Image (cartoon, rainbow, N blue to C red; front, side):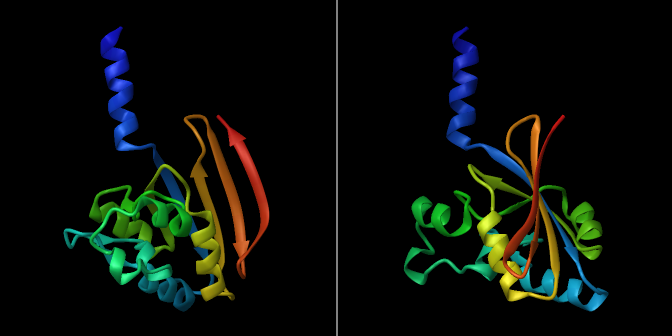
Length: 153
């Protein structure tokens, strides 16, 4: 029984990993512009299909710190996004305007709304896992959530 509790403690230290999917709707040029805008690199220089710093840059004085409070407030996640799939799979999704990424201990809904404000003529379908069996979908246009649905299963 102690082994089970140790595993739970270990998972809690890592943080809850949340799968996120972002579908971008527009013409080919608009989709390419959004994908180019949000792409970035992680701390180790590995390509990210979405880098939260491109939408809401972390302040210079906090760049080398682990300021989780700032990240939660501005990104909705304890850390920057991480790729969900390996690079080749991500690249195939990325080309089609479908972005898959991981957040920690929260979703990036408000950040995606900010992205939608930056690209007001583009539509976004953002869905993320709330828990193991529940997924939430949001349609966002011009910074506004125009439809929302939670699904179990």
